[in-house]
Image (cartoon, protein in one colour):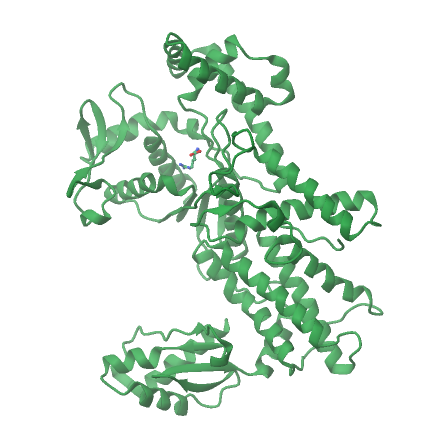
Length: 584
Ligand code: ARG
């Protein structure tokens, strides 16, 4: 159990002794980390809240709490301001906790009590359409959520819902038959398909007769034409090979690749069912879902305000020409995941512009009586230094492969400057770890809802909240252990007394609180900020407290704190899919 949970339980019990029946039976006193250490490690406003309801003096209630709390081995309590209760954790308790962490593989992170089956839908690029920079965000955030949820004990299913059945195939099919360069296709399939798509797209703009020809190809594909189906399958196969190449460099894998086309056969029956149940109806020849009036207009995803009035924005699930849409596929996908995977939760890591789409999908599920932890894990855009969408000099979207290559090149220079004598092979491996780590950490340290500026210098700097800084901190800790004689053996108990030791122990112990909170909110930046704080606390500790030159129990304790710092940094970064080099 984490420290705030323990304190909360004890505090709730104390309040029950004082207030008796007056305390609501389900009441749980909130205990949160203090913003400022001058007010202790944790604080609670429970006395203030309850006193207000009971028309008591809040400071008087807080005083009673402190008198009744008893002699705690965990913390000393004090009143602050109008009736806050502050908890200062005793150094001996930090020592006990850190000693326990030394023999715990999970480093103080408890498994969830009720594991869920969570499907994580992320990355999901569209075949032969430019893989926009937004995919960096979805791909890296989604992978991290999967790692976090697995570590917490959930059953996780990662699914790459690639866009393999869009209208773009009309143009690709025509292009494949008329302008594709087979050589280029073999060299770089994704690039070749992308070029075909771009070329046909621009030709369509100049030549009006071309678009109908592309549409014809699409209709043939949808009608099951053998030749077109074969080309379509080849397109998907080469795209997958190209994507796998990128994912493997990023150390990212998927349990499934159930693209949009996997649901083709489920779409017609789904629409029929929604019509039969009265959830969808015909409008101008199309089949649509309108608001059922369940929500207040301002929360209703099927309404928008126009000139002071609420007007309907239905979800179209079948066009007048019989074609199905993105929304139809997502409804069928959700059915599949709840039925076949028994998913309790489905998390969609998709950019903020699709907010309305997901609100509508989840609301249609409510109308159908399907419930679950369905979340749109949204994110903002990646910007260039000019604060406009991140593009190449010539204005093209930047391919993920180019980003990876540049990161590794730049990281090579960093490693070169730091360790010119490192063997070439090791240098290359470290540069890869540092470069890819830098991209990932730059992403994960952002609040996902904000736009952020893609800044090479900043993300590869050896100072500040960057992967190289954290990796270098890890390397420094590890180097201490290369200087001791023999193996490090963990002591049974620690003696913590110096301020810098207390600070470091406080942060180490907090790992068990931060990891679950990061997953609950789907906010990797919480863990990123924590790891940065931990590394800084380590450096302050290392400056203030000699490790190798100390002796006896002090030395044992300090070495143990170093050991735990290394383990937590490595585990924490591992949850981001970032490796730690042993030297750099
Ligand atoms: N292919 C889509 C796009 O690039 C993302 C798909 C996200 N997942 C989903 N189930 N809709 O915008």
